[in-house]
Length: 273
Ligand SMILES: Cc1cc2nc3c(=O)[nH]c(=O)nc-3n(C[C@H](O)[C@H](O)[C@H](O)COP(=O)(O)OP(=O)(O)OC[C@H]3O[C@@H](n4cnc5c(N)ncnc54)[C@H](O)[C@@H]3O)c2cc1C
Ligand code: FES
Image 1: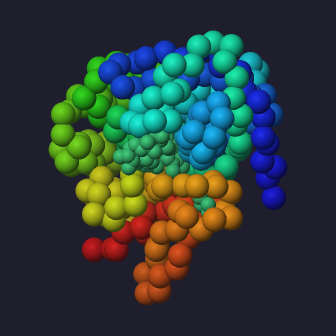
Image 2: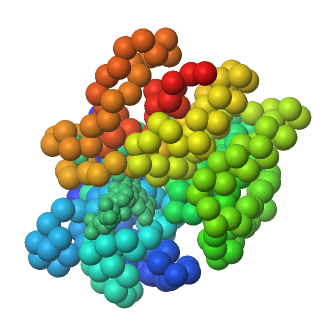
């Protein structure tokens, strides 16, 4: 079993990207040494017991040499609002790495990534990992903010990005999957990833449509799910979702998003056809 560390982290940088979207960089060398793309940390955001629960946040960038990770976050409530006030030097407690993370095939030639807005965060680390493993990376990303899309201006490497400035979450699914379909015929793809941070929602058109394409092409599609969490460690059963047990999709099982996830294969999440 992989080791989970409880570290005191130090804020290295905390900058507003645009509007309510921020990028936090923290020094946490033990976690940074082992965390993988798609895994998350539980961050203590209040000084005392308010708020009581740690907040789950996915790693967006990993800098192993510096012993640091970055997190792309949206300030939506009490905890994340408190985080926006953190200055460099501020320290807090962080638990991780947690969850399973995305997996790359052993001999990977090409991967496609799809994500929107804050869901782009988990994909950033995956792009870097894919490029380091020599894969061609095709990223289909949408956001209503130019500044968020600019985060995906990856430095060099064999990465091609299609950026879609959108204002409507319902539009982005069809656009991204149409683009994916256009390139898939001529590129060798081994796996497709959705950096959804989707609340468990089998009707999400991005997951449904990507799953349909993946099934047609015989390519595994992985999606990162978001669910309310309390412990983040698999103990409280607070993040349970009901998923398909196997690809026959006959039986359903309960899974803990924090432990068996947050990354699942789309056949676990959405019904075929
Ligand atoms: C595994 C995992 C990874 C995550 N990674 C990221 C990340 O990288 N970046 C990021 O910005 N967010 C991420 N989230 C969501 C993030 O944890 C929540 O937005 C955060 O906990 C809200 O805390 P708060 O105190 O600011 O808001 P609260 O005051 O607790 O709630 C404010 C509002 O946010 C909603 N909310 C609370 N928790 C969630 C949640 N888990 N999902 C969706 N809505 C929620 C509430 O319903 C409420 O409307 C992740 C969640 C999970 C489960
Ligand atoms: S949050 Fe406690 S089991 Fe998942």
